[in-house]
Image (cartoon, rainbow, N blue to C red; front, side, top):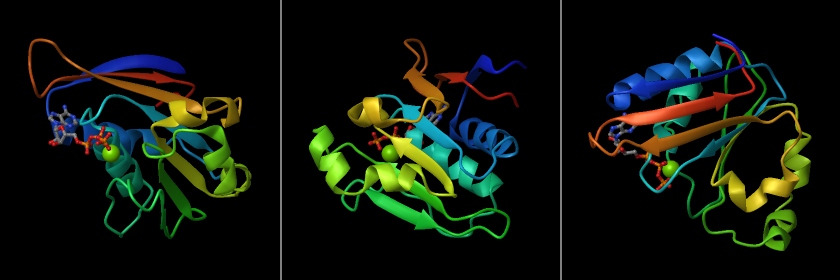
Length: 147
Ligand SMILES: Nc1ncnc2c1ncn2[C@@H]1O[C@H](COP(=O)(O)OP(=O)(O)OP(=O)(O)O)[C@@H](O)[C@H]1O
Ligand SMILES: [Mg+2]
C-alpha cells in the first residue's frame, strides 16, 4: 500500500492488528495524530501500535493526566497524549508540548485537532470514523506512512 490508504476494520481486534502493522513502519521521532470521535477507537489503535513497538505497559486514554510515557526495548520512550481536556493552544504550550515534539521518542496524540498548528509537518495523520451500518465497523484513513 502507498503512503496514503484506507482500511475498514470489523472489530477492535482488527483495529489493534492494524496498529501492530503500522508500528512496524515507525521510527524514532515519528509523530502520529489519531483523529476521531469519542469511542471511535483511537486508544485501541494506539494500543496496537504500542504492542507493535514492544511496549509491555497498559495502554489507556490518558484523559486526566494528559500524557502517558511507555518504555520499549526497541525504541526511545513513547509518549501518548490525550488532548481532549486541553482546549486552548496556550494550555497545550504550557505543558511543554513543543519540547515533546522535539523528543527522540515516538509520539501518539489523541484529539490532535486541539494542537493542529503545533503538529510537525511530517506528522502521520490517521482518521477513524464510525460506520453508519455496523456499530463495530470503523473506516480508518492513514496519511503519511506505508505499511
Ligand atoms: N472496529 C473497531 N475498532 C476499534 N474499536 C472498536 C471497533 N468496534 C467496536 N469498538 C469499540 O469501540 C470502543 C473504542 O474505544 P477507544 O477507547 O479506543 O475510543 P477512543 O477513540 O480512544 O475514545 P476517547 O475519545 O473517549 O478517548 C471500544 O469500546 C471498542 O471495543
Ligand atoms: Mg481514547
